[in-house]
Length: 578
Image (cartoon, rainbow, N blue to C red; front, side, top):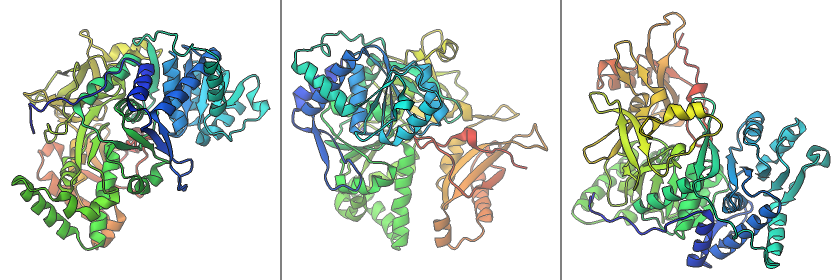
């Protein structure tokens, strides 16, 4: 760790249109975005920064000609080059993007588009059937234009009614023709960076999401100030859902501004093969992905009867590094080959990450920079840096971002509050909810509990909504217990909560609900999973203060339900214990 390590060079971003233009000028024919039309294709499509600029400009020019400047435009669909162009093209002309989670139920998709009064909708091929069904049910009333990102999409005339349907290639061609004829409307417009630019509905792990209003200043300054923290490499692989700010802001805005190639994944089930084939040099992930990667490393080692050997080699490697000898890339070449062989760096955010996972990857030769972000902060709040890190911390606040702890307890733990240019404008059409999260000094209350050390580093304890308050007034943070239980062999997923008893309604019982790793238990010869986990929990309880003790162990036979950010949706869990 080096406190005086300088910040990295970055590109100052004024607005989305300027970002696209400057990237084209600075990086020209270098590859901006790469992807496959189909995951099984051998051919990788490569789009240069110049071509990307042209496509965004042509798309924006056409959208202006359709009367969509400053209107709201929804984007619903899988991650794709078309999704990226729609996102930048709409904001480049001063329109408001409304990214929508394609996995939402029909009523929620229609509700978001209707509530925000979108005039146009871009939709991907995986969302076509949902769009048709919503139309058949009389939805999308505010929409005048539907734009298919996939060229082969068809929607019957009787479903469209008076709405128009165009393909994105058709729209871009129309814009290109207008631009060639001297139409400069795309450029002849001053973008107000402080106006509403995007409405992002939170995925929510505790219920209904809210529409977070972000300006171009929020997004661009968050990435300008945030990228001072990172020395990113030449190529990344975009795995996260694009409607999520971590997926759109960090992967697209932050990386393309720096000239980084972004390979767009074809989907979660293809990621392992894509990492091997595309050989990214760094990744942007949420902790859930890293937990899976970590489990695969150890599962592979166990199957090859090399678990003990791997642990010994990691210890030897760590000792060698202390005397200035780094042989990790050679020593663990077979392990690293599963990640393409060139992976150097992983930036993780969105939730707390187990420090043991960070240490494991570091021992193997991959640096993990743990950060902290939330949709309402566009999303980045803090991050560890390549050469300036603290174990257990999510880093220091990005430049110009102030963090305070509200109402700290005797341990200095309280609610994390943020003030800075990255903080949202408010919640869409919800002034009451907005007023609830801002205090009189203008600080946004994140709903996360944590503390600051004497040097201003942030440590996250847990979510305010997950907090268990005992009858004696003691606070129990489920995430802390979950982190310890996750280290128990055989635990695939675990959630800790206050169990609800029908017989003793006033009694608080701390419950650990576990989804076991059946294969690992079988490999270990463990036949009675309930008995095994109860024993492990007793051992853990002995190391904790008595008030934190887990009193009930509940096993489940399927994974916990998750949102598209791979976060467990706690509100769906049946918390009854009798």
